[in-house]
Length: 347
Image (cartoon, rainbow, N blue to C red; front, side):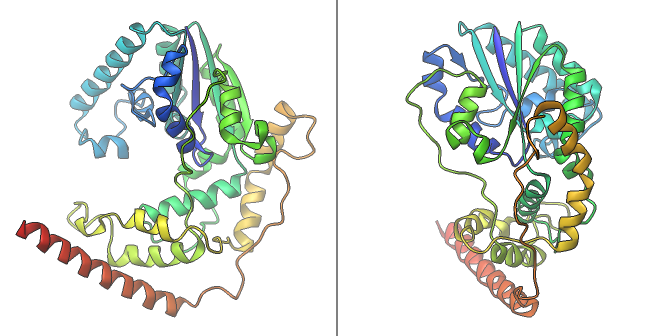
């Protein structure tokens, strides 16, 4: 049985690819390709969680209330057994799985080797699909995600957090996975439109995964970055209406604030990093990019197509005006939340 394993990286169209697989699961099944559900309906996050060090508690385990080590290990064993049973029951000759958390969470060689052992016991042919994106573009997108998740960070840090650095250090990712998931074949793809098959991400993924030519449903674009105004207002709002309350519980006032901002702040002027941040990130990952180019794309002059970097300038939005706008939005949000709560209590 053949496995096409899409491992990321984050912020390279992973949600779009996963929604594509979810929406076309039945059609693919009819044509000999199985997309498992036991590891996750869309993002098969459980596959990455199964092989984390048993002492590691990340946001996924916290959300599932699996901080207790014994309970966490038991859950991981149950997930492995469920996925094994699902694969064993299949008559399809091809399985496709996708989770960017494989790349972003499995940092340790031992974790990737454990995943490799599990997969090699079940598949005779394993292809790993990895999309890589320009590091600075990825970092800007990660910053947007952080703000949507509650961060108050005003600017890109000049030295990226370890999680972000791991995602954009493509040389380290490739070497780590090649060394520990052998003899799997690595299919490396560049996340930029000019390099996609037919200039389209999904057409490119269909080609990389060797999926049959079918009349597929195409999902809407998902998980888009906020524009500059949305980011500036939301990060201030995050101070007034934090995700986590002082007692460690989730703030019920947050409601669907993330969804509202995504719907209303996606078409304006984009967030622009400072000139200092642009220089810092370009320098930090130049050696990594050069190694990838020389190793996999020696015919290219540059790994990623050069672009004119727009940078933050002095015509930025006035901080005082933004503070007032955020305070006003917070007051309105709280008022509507109270009204909704009272209405719910009356019914």
